[in-house]
Image (tube, rainbow over all chains, first blue to last red; front, side):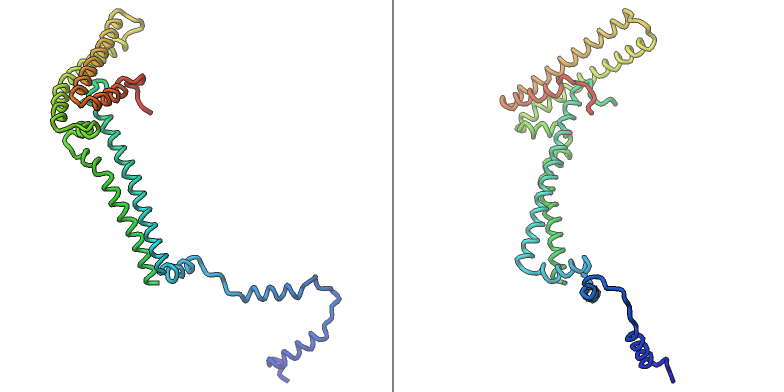
Length: 113
Length: 152
């Protein structure tokens, strides 16, 4: 008799399981918990952040209204930052030149050669 | 995905181009001031809206003033050296130190008088409103209570 064959093995296991008795009581809602764990294990894994972004770029961004809004918002950001930094830089240069004007005329501040 | 990527890049390029254009436009006046022969005078012309004729008169006054300023610088430096030497050897206020301090004070007064005279001359060369504005600004700059103090 070949006990290594799968059919024989299952039969033996079934027999043992049928004979097996235990007095320990199961925790409440055990069966429901087991099923929940099985469902969770079988659920597809959540997509990665990059996959979500790539999906968004491939499917959502090409929509005309969204594409136009995206380009318009970035243009506005570029204009605003350029304007703010340009004004700041101009003010800094003018401030330096005004200081320099006074320094050139004041013997106590004038640069010595 | 290809179209989406193109739109993504297009937005970034548009933002960079908009930034560069606006920044260069906003700083063009500052850059032209820095490129000029005498940037501080070019700044004065722009700040006080001087015509070419007014600017020429201001520039002439400026050029005429500079040798006086240099002469004053030399006197101040020489006086500072002498005072330093006297102070290095002194343990008391000697008559020489007294005299050197008085001379330093006289030089400072003379220097301020000379500057003030120049500022008045320059302001009179400008249109009246700009002249008043120039005087108010330059007096604040050169005769503030913390005049000559190092800034933090």
